[in-house]
Length: 218
Image (tube, rainbow, N blue to C red; front, side, top):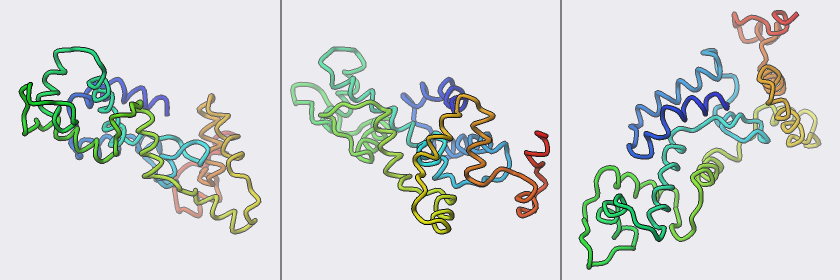
């Protein structure tokens, strides 16, 4: 997932801070991420699970829509800092009144630009408290948690029904996460625990032409 983050960050994050992308563009880019994760093969694990934290059986896949919105908040908190900068005059003019920090002694507009209108909508959507500065990462993780969790992986549900609630899944997923320094081992462990590793039995069950992972190894 570090690869995805690096590739996206180098081409996208600096853009979304100043120009909001259309939903069509975000959906298209998100679709490409899923193709990369699954090598353009069927997705055997729910996307909600993949978006979750490692300790919930996920991969921390980036949600571009939430991430691109969360990155806007740094601008707001820098604006509220007690310092002067030319760009702050423009921001104060367009949305100073909406943020409750403007007064009639300075010019202001009742009609924000499309970008600032988008920014105000996102602030309301995330329920941002301008009085309590926080990093974009914290807002992103909080939003992911609100939107995605609690999501229980299918393998957890299946084995809990079979063996009861004695399985300590946090420890199981923690052991899987420890192998993340080795991408091949990580992928093998993660797919094995989720029971989506394409071995002969599952390939036959799925009516798939995917090569058996174990056969190619041995």
